[in-house]
Length: 157
Image (tube, rainbow, N blue to C red; front, side, top):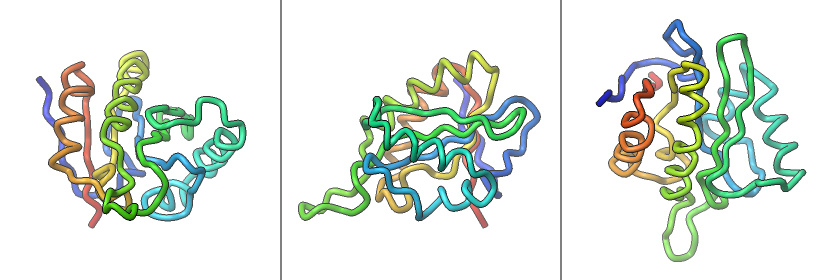
């Protein structure tokens, strides 16, 4: 089985030659304005515009759904709805929804294989979404890696 390639750098500047899909987590309330999405928006307008259109349409805009947006000839961005709202609730439950992240990554497998693309991401779900990498890493292993998809995780310096 493949293993995750850990790199230092910026996930919005993938460091490989083949087709690339940059994936990140979005919330289920249409909010886009903090965290990694800001780096994406600084570089490309389309992922945010498409996400907002998707939210307004209400079509299939649910936890566990993905939206893939082409931003360059060999780079796509995958908006994954893996976060419920944006703040930790009164019971102390953070916004991350691991089962939704797993559903999203499972849906991403077909696209990656079809495009012969590698997946690039920051440590998804571990910033504002409040998740633990110890929970996310095994999800990546049993979805993408077990299906022979190359994964690169970036730690921003």
